[in-house]
Figure: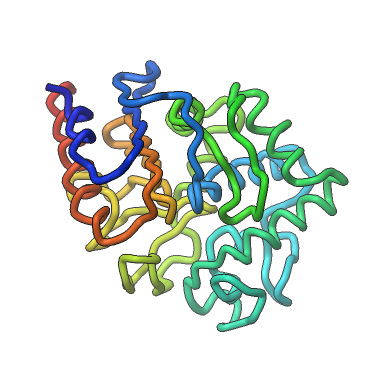
Amino acid sequence: MSVLESLTEWPVDNVSAAVITRNGVAEEFGDPVRVYELASVTKLLVAEAILVAVEEGAVELDDPARPPGATIRHLLAHASGLAFDSRDIEAGVGEKRIYSSAGFEVLAETVEQAAGICFAEYLADAVCAPLGLDSTELYGPAGHGARSTAADLARFAQELLEPRLLAPQTLADATSVQFPGLDGFVPGYGRHRPNDWGLGFEIRAEKSPHWTGTGNSPRTFGHFGQAGTYLWVDPELQAACVVLTDRAFGPWAKPLWSEFNDRVVSELSSQK
């Protein structure tokens, strides 16, 4: 029995999932075209669009942004000092890893001003259209306001395994630790010292507890969302996993996510 069949035991009404390798979707479960709220998995798509804007020359990572002293790089890496859900300043720039959805709204506005185009439209043109993400839409805030499908996110995950939109070095930098040594919280999983993050991509490193599996490599990157969604890419395995549900993240998810991801990693490792 495929490990994905165990998703039938999850306490959710609907779940769609996919395991992806460099060759495409290796396995899938559920309705691949059912649309789900992504919550903070949105940040991965937004980060990709901003990195495209960097490569196109619309902005640069070290361009100034808000708050004063912060750059686009600081905002992507949650090192700007902005609060989680407001534009209040809670720390100095580069002092702490304060996970900030509000910071992604600032990022979207910064790219809008530089490119002269609504950010949702920029995301659609720069990321969704070339990757064929036909069911993906940013309809709300850039930190958490997108919808998508398992099929679309599987295509996006394959892009993260073998980049075509971005130069490989750009993606490598984006999935490397920015501002090393900063402590901070992963929502729902507590404080980590350090709380490693890339440019929009959370990096697993040695965090425990964590929403990925204990068997995922420290280089694993991705994001989870409070909508009960996640996407991770493990460069050591050369594989990725997408799981979308319609039940909000909570105590039910923590043991199931970790156990399921460990089973996925074990199955992938046995096939290498």
